[in-house]
Image (cartoon, rainbow, N blue to C red; front, side, top):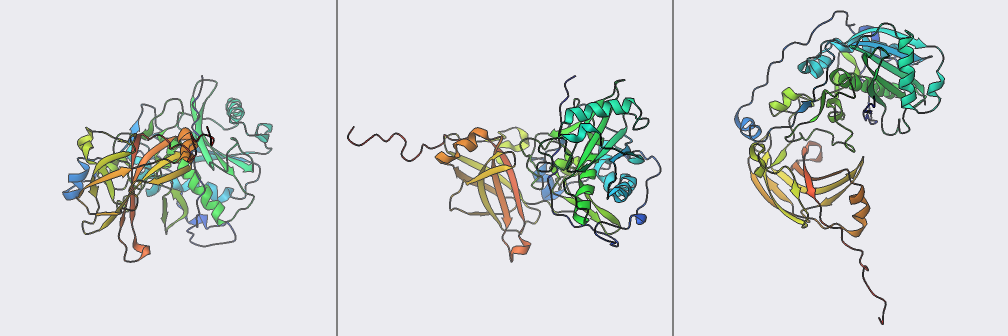
Amino acid sequence: MMWLRRAVVVLPLAFGVACTESHGSNEIVVATVTRCTESRAAEPITELGMEGRRQAFFSVHPLAQLKNLGGRTMTAPRIVAVFFGEDTMRRQTEALMQSYGCTPFWRDAVGEYGVGDALYERTIVVAEVPPVLATPDLGAFEAWVVDSEAAGMFGALTEEHALMFFLPPKVTLLSDDCSARLGAHSGVVTKDQRHIAYAYFDACTTTTNADDLATRTHAITHELIEMSMDPDPAIPAWNTLDVGIAAPSLRPSIGNGDTEGADFCNDHLATAADYPFEIARNFSNRSARAGRDPCDLAAPLAPLAALRDNRAGMGPTSIDLSSGAAHVVLDIFAEDPSDVLSLEAFAVIADGDASSEYSLLGATRATTHDGDVAAIDLRLTLPFYAASEVAKATRTEVLIQLCTKPVNVSNTVCGQSRIPISALPPVQPPPDAGAGDAGH
């Protein structure tokens, strides 16, 4: 069977560990965390209400939600950790896996999708690094996992188990590990046809300081969230966004590689004074249905714009710039109706994580408010040097940026609404294109 590889991008972020007490470069007081010991099913969710201006806007322009594509989820995940030789962060890593799956963070992240508490079962230590890890080869690693599982290396496994592999320093499975990602998840089919989800985590440095620990705990929780909601790569479950407005807080898809809930919310962290690890957030359909920030219910939703012609989802969902111009009418939403918003518009042409922006309003800067109907004229001329960008583009969109007019820079709040571009104008020829030689 040919398997779809789903390598989840977990880009490096700057972290600081919130610790109750510090002991050295990467030690935290792990004895203070409460271990998860009892199985607990997901509880039924209560919908969030909408009223007033929020209801008026989002009943017409709903936020996009994660789609269920028909695959299974893990209703009671069980964690098996696999280390290769000595790992300087093993103690802290195990404390996270022993405690995270029954925290409010975990239940808030996955409970609405039918996933119950995640319990840590055991650690396996592979004393010698297997030869398969000598070179980056994900396929060979997966074959090793299947053979090792058949030999009983990981203990008894069911389809509710999540194998978590912690690679030795500088060992990678894909050629762009440590530059494009710090971890990924996928799945294998055992020799007796069970589907087992796994994740791997890169140790991209030989240091073991607080930032390295925070990076690992963020990656572990990111992948565990996604594994529980979408464990089988060939039969996706909760994966990709449905039609609707992408909330401003979402990270834009990098080369169409961000398709799962924790991907979209990868730029957001969950921390608490009584839990000593930095952890990932997940996309909440419940919050999106209520017109609230799907990555953080406690955060205000940034200002956003929607195509007025697409009221109730019945009109166009993209902007045609093939002529170099377009007249666009936008509905504006801001949580504070007194906010004065500056409006700017850019064409974004992106290939992976590289992108270029071209102003669509020139020197014009419009101002608007919540409830306004904003009519703007967009104009785009693509210079000759944009030809290679256009040819390689994996994502083209109009970015509408709405910012509160600040009293000072620190209290500026900006929201970015992204509307796909259906067609770009031709790239302009070079300045001397077509010029003949003098005298001919």
